[in-house]
Length: 570
Image (cartoon, rainbow, N blue to C red; front, top):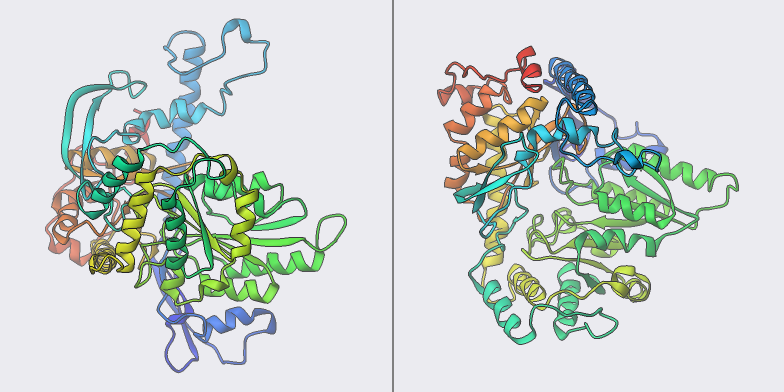
C-alpha cells in the first residue's frame, strides 16, 4: 500500500508511507525529514512532503504479488503454453479439429494473413475461458440486468442460445457510475421526446448538414460544467483521443505517456508521428527525469529543442483503480513549460463533490489543464466524448480534427440524454437528484472497499475510486471466479494477460450510485465470501472468521497449490 505524503502529521516534519513487502504483506514505515533536507532538484517532492500540493488524504494500495503465487502463475501459463503447442501439432496433422481461421493450402506461398504465433494465445488460452466475456444482455444495464443464456458444446469455440434469460443479475461490471443508464425517468423521457422530433440519425457531419441546435447547446453546457472557455463534442469516446491527439502534435513534438494509459491514448500518440516516451505509472520522479532530459538534450541527432512537449495522463485508470497525482503533475508541467492532456473518461461525474472530475476532487483550477478530455459513455449513460479548453484550442480542432471533419454527428436522443443528465448533476433541473447520486456513489465506494479489506481481499487502487480491482493471480481462477459468481446471479468482469501483467489477473468491480447497501451486502454475502475463500483470493482476517466462512473447501478447490496449475490445463 502506498500513501501520499499529504497525510503527514500537522507539524510538517513527518511523512508516512506504506510499502509492500516481498511476500505480499504490507509493512509500515515512518520517515522523519527536516524541512531543509530536500534537494533543489526535487522541489516537487519536497512540496508534497510538506503537504503543499494536496488538500486531502491521498491513499492508494498496491501489493506486490506473493512469491509463491507468482511462481505458480508462471508455471500455470508455462504448462498451458506447452499443451498449446502440443494441440497445435495435433491440429497440423488433422488429429484434432481446428476451428480457428487458417491459411488455405494453396496460399502457403502467400504473405501470411493469419499469424499463427500471434493467434496462439487466443487459440489455446483465451478460448478456454471465453465464456466469461462478451456475454449479451437483454435489459437496461442498471444495478441489475438480464443476460441471454447461452451454452457451448465445443469448448467455447461457438455458442448457441437457449432462448431463455438469466434474470436479475447484479451488475458489478458496467461503468454506470451515477446510475443514468435507465429506461425510466427524466432523461429517458427527454430523449424519447427529441427522438419523435428529430429522429434517430443525423446522416451528416457537423461541418455539412449535421449540426443541430442541440449540439450547440450541449457544447455550451459542457464548457460551463467543466469551467472552461469552450468545449467540443464527438460521437465516439475512443475517437476523441485517437483522432484529436494527431491534430495537436506531430513530427518534432514529444509525448510523455503514462505506462498504463488507455489504448485510445496510445493509438492517438502513435498516429501523431511524435516521439513517444513512457514514464512509470503515477511516478513523478520518472516523469520529471524525462522532462529534464527532454529539455537538456532536445531532439535526437539534431539536439534542437522540441516543438512541443505533451503529457498524457488519465483521471482514473480503469485497470488499476488509481487516481492521477494531478497536483504534482501540474507542478511539473508549470516548472518545465509542458502541455497537459487529461483524459477524464472514468473520473468525470465519478469524482469530486460536484461530479466535475479530478480537478474538482483536488480543488484545482481548470485553466491549469491545457486539454481536458472526457467521455459521455459512463457517468452520463450515453455515448461520445468531449474536448474542453481555451476557445482558440476548440476553434483549431473544429478545422483540423479528423473526428470533427469526417465523423457523423451525434444522434439527437443521445445528445438529449447527455444534456438532461448533465443538468441533473449541476442541479439546473431544479432538483437535488444529481447531488444525491454523487454522494451515494462516494458512500458506496467507501463501503464496498472497506468491506472487502475487512474480509481480507487483496484490492488495488485509490480509496475514493469507484473502480475496484480484486486480485485473482492464477489463470485457473479467472474462469472459475466469473462462472461461480454468475451461478449466484452476480455479473463481474475478470481481466487477465495481456490486458494486465501476467501475474496480476484480477476481477474488476465498478460501483454505481444505483447500487443499494442491500445489493452490495448481497454481493459480499457468504456465497461470495465462501467462494473467494475456496479460490484463496483472500487472506485470513478476523472479520472473515467472524462470518463463519471457514468450512472445508470443495473438492474442486483452487487453492494456491500445484492442483491449480493442472486445473488450468484440463
